[in-house]
Every structure is written in structure tokens, then in C-alpha cells.
Amino acid sequence: MVAALVAGALFTHQLLWTPISAVNMKDIATNQFKMTDASFSGVDRDGNPFQIRAETARQEYDQPDIIYLDSIRGNITRKVDGKPQKNDVSARQGKYDIKAKRVTLTGNVRMDSSTGDKVITDEMVIKL
Image (cartoon, rainbow, N blue to C red; front, side, top):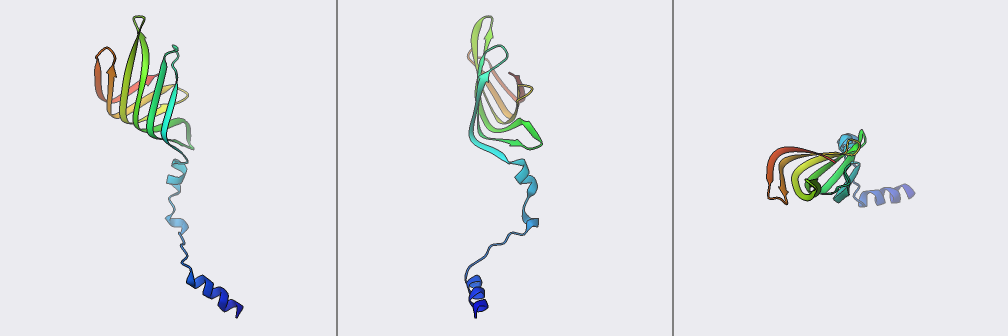
């Protein structure tokens, strides 16, 4: 009788089982540290401020010093001939190498300078 009650309870509830073979372990390991509306700011080696914002940012276990970015916007201020020059940048994707202090932007990269200069390219590397 007890077995019938236990079996009846199991059959009246829907159970969802996911076989282990259906779990994409590479995707889980790749996207362990994921942020939305991420913002990184600081100063470069010359003391000039920068700010990078991304719709999403993620780190991977095997490359903890690299932050992968999507839908990037930011600004970088540099001194040119002693005067501050603000550069607004945007790109579809990129990666921020924390140790090398380098941002590599890819995909529809655009930079607009406060001097009126504009750069449009597929890839840009910015050393911070």
C-alpha cells in the first residue's frame, strides 16, 4: 500500500530530467563569470582617465586576465601638445587584457575625437 502511494505521487508530478550528455560543459566553463552593463574605468600609464562600458562582459577560466566585451562604448582622454583630447570609441566586440593594459576592439570600430578627427576601422588596439 505504501509503495502504491509513493508511486502514485511520482506519477502525478511531472519530472524534468536532463541527461548529462545534453549539458554543454564547454559553454558553462566558458561563461562562468558574466556581467551585464559592465563598466571599467581607470587611468593609463600617463595618468590620463579612461572609461569602457559594455553591454556584456565575461571572463573564462583558462584566461583570467582577459575580459571579453560586447557592444562597447567608452572614452579615452589623452594629452596632445599639452592639451587634453577626448576620444569617444565604440565597437561591436573587444577584449581587455588586464596584464598588458591593452584593449583590442573589433567589428565596426569607430573613434570620434574632440578635435573633429574620425576613425572607422575593423580593428583598433588601444594601449592604456
